Image 1 (cartoon, rainbow, N blue to C red):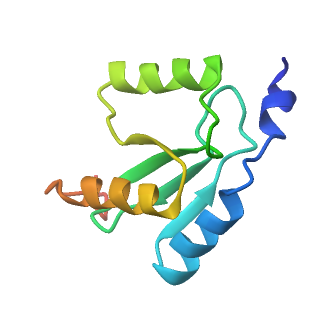
Image 2 (cartoon, rainbow, N blue to C red):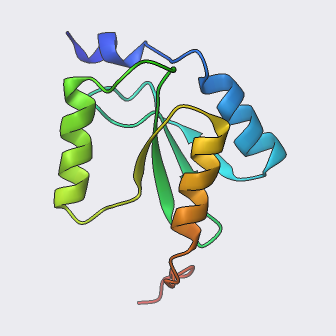
Length: 111
């Protein structure tokens, strides 16, 4: 399967989840489902500044081999804010989990 074959698929619940998280809960949402190569479907910026990677799946569906490989690479690199989600509630739980981390995200860079 080519890059474009992966990138054109979007799960049926993606739009509803995006609408709720972005429009009703007011989180910054970036659609990345067209990226392919196992990259997650969306990135949400938690209120503490941490980017949360979301692999959105329709109920009853699982990750493909590229998605599993990407998730494993993130874990190996020490990035633990990648979640497979099926519903708005899953996304809310993931964001709440990430927002429990009390880390300082530098907002401005100086030389």
